[in-house]
Every structure is written in C-alpha cells, then in structure tokens.
Image (spheres, rainbow, N blue to C red):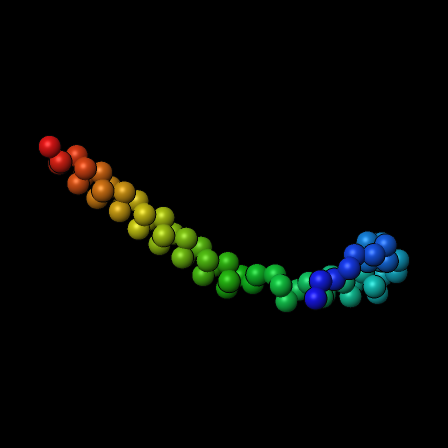
Length: 65
C-alpha cells in the first residue's frame, strides 16, 4: 500500500519535541561505526581482489600469440 503525500506530511515540524521525535525515528536506519568498519573491510577486499584478477587477466592476454 503506497503512502499518500499530503501537505501535512510536507510541512516542517512546529515544536521542538516533534522535531526530536522525527530525528530519533531515523536513528535505526543509520549505520553504526561497526557497520562502517565492516563495509570498509569488505570494500578493501573487493578492490584488492579485483586488482589481482585484472592483473592476472592482462598477463594471460599478453601471452596469447
């Protein structure tokens, strides 16, 4: 079921408690430091692996007569 966008949902919150509630509602969707470190390690492994694979492929292609 799609959510309808109305003028009430587009209006900025008026008071501080409403603003804080909206901000705190977004916290579960944000990444933690542990999430970012795990992603960084995964990206480094993929980049190094891809680089090694590219070098191996180029070496193989270079030896084809």
